[in-house]
Amino acid sequence: MKCANNIKRLNKYILVLLMVSFILFFSNGVNAKVNVGHCADCHTMHNSQNNASVAYELNTSYTGYDTVSTPNNYLLKSDCAGCHSSTSTATIDGNETPIVFNTSNFSNPLAGGNFSYVLSDDSMGHNVDFITAPDVQLGLTPPGGSTMSSQLTCAGEYGCHGDRTSGKTNYSGTKGAHHTDDTGGITGTSIGLSYRFLNGILGTEDNDWEQETSVDHNQYKGSTSSAADTISYLCSRCHGDFHTWTGGASEVGTASPWLRHPTDVDLPATGEFAGYTTYNATAPVAQTTPGLTTNDTVTPGSDVVMCLSCHRAHSSPYYKILRWDIKGTLSQAMSGCIVCHTSKD
Image 1 (cartoon, rainbow, N blue to C red):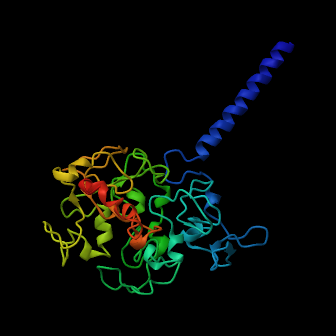
Image 2: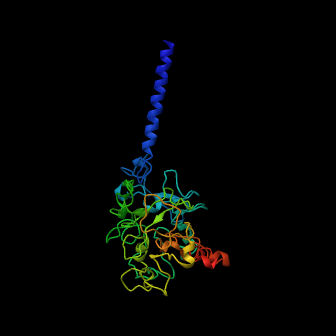
């Protein structure tokens, strides 16, 4: 009898462990854009808890967060800035949310860079409205483009992410995208199935937002024709004069000698360029057909030079959002150029 009771007790413990494992497994949102399964992590039903507002925003001094009495759209607790900023040093928080603006010293910035650099120098990043005022010198005119009627936002009509059509404001432009299951790959057929919610853009997403190694990185889509699904095409929507295939008054052209450095042209398979065969995150190149996984091989004659070969998307610690310090020592200034221009090393 005692043995039977022990067996029953053991079976009960095993059942409890299985139930806990099941809950933990599915609360992690396996194979989904949002990796934590609790709705209340992002949403509030009534913006009220214990006689206090739940909605919050990053305060203007960047030292913390203030509650706000006015509910956010879509029952959200906060906006882009509130969810993707942190007063800690972490660039991926406990809910596996990518952090693009840290108010404290941080390490391991993500692939797009960290907007904190813009606070000290306009030339180091995009002046997004929740971080800082418009660029003192440029105002609302992006280099190589036309003057905008509103400051740059994260998403929507005046942003990069989500639906960029008229009338969409900031996070309303990404409505529903965070819940999209993209296990079948990035197809560009919806915001949630687009690379990093950049509507219509293709690529392969690194699962930790690129803690850079040659085999653990994003893979960007490039093209040597006027395709509208490349990362450089997205950049051209504001910086048109710098892009090879805008179809308008581009100041680049499609053949050498170049007036400006080309984008969306293949890395030549001859000369010094043929020496770039192992992926280098200092000066990455795009692929014409990104797969479900990334690799560390570069194929001259096929892989493509893009805007992000030289620049970060959000911000960087260097002049003009570059990936390396062109104002440093000679070796520092050349460190990115020689990745492609191997004979200059």
